[in-house]
Length: 186
Image (spheres, rainbow, N blue to C red):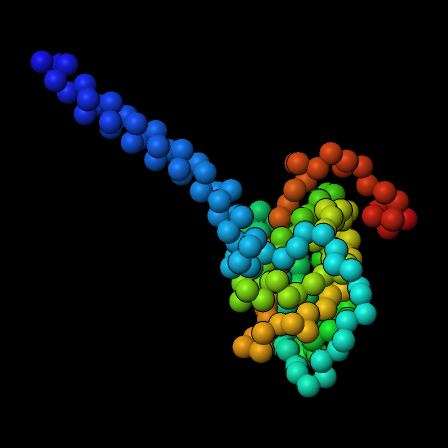
């Protein structure tokens, strides 16, 4: 009697394994899809070149800046300005402010996101604190610079771009936890 269900059992096991494999493959497939389409709002993780782009003075784009620390990150983290109007092609610099109110050295990592997601393809960071981990001694604060431009090829449907950073505590994953004299305020 048990052999009667063997073909069905084999098919069900195969389907379960195939579903598991498909679910496992979805993460890299999703990343590739989002990189190609720009749908996830991820910005480049490396610096853009500051080539002399033609500035489009006939257009203005509003850039909104948002900052939030992750729940486990005790830092105060905020943009110096929350809104800026730019012409596509112009290079701009702004700062984010970070303050470590604790008594210990903490290493932070900012993860950017752009909304709407398709606009991420046209938002270029030349210099960004998000490219590296930020080390901040207890009781200290610092300015973290962001230098960027909006590509003049940005479709006209986009008149506002929101750049959002989430700051994470990566101290436990950091390999070098010794504070330098500049971090200690000496």
